[in-house]
Length: 136
Image (cartoon, rainbow, N blue to C red; front, side, top):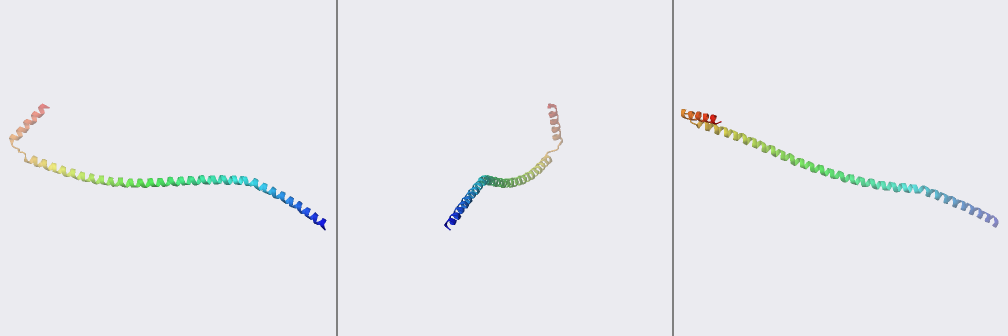
C-alpha cells in the first residue's frame, strides 16, 4: 500500500512538473503577445495625447477667430454709424449751399435792380467795356 501511494505520489509529481512546464510555456507565450500589445497601447496613448493637444489648439484658434469676428462686427457697426452721420452732415451742407445760392441770387438781383440805368451810366459802361477790350 505504501509503495502504491509512493507511485501515485511520483505520478502526481510528474503531472505537476508537466503542468508547471505548460504554465511557464503559457506565461512565456502570453508575455510574447503582451509586449506588442503594450507597445500598441503606448503608441495609442501618445496619439491620443497628441490629438487632445491638437483639439485644444483648434478650440483656442476658433475662440480667437470668434473674438476677431465679434470685434470686426463692432467695427462695422461703428463705421456704419459714422457713414450715416456723414450722410446727414452732407445733406445739411447741401441744404446750406442751396440757401446760400438763393441768398446770393437774391442779393445779385437786388443789386442789379438798384443800379441806375441812365444814359450816362450806360455810356460809362460802354466806354469801360471798350477800354477793357482794348487793353486785352
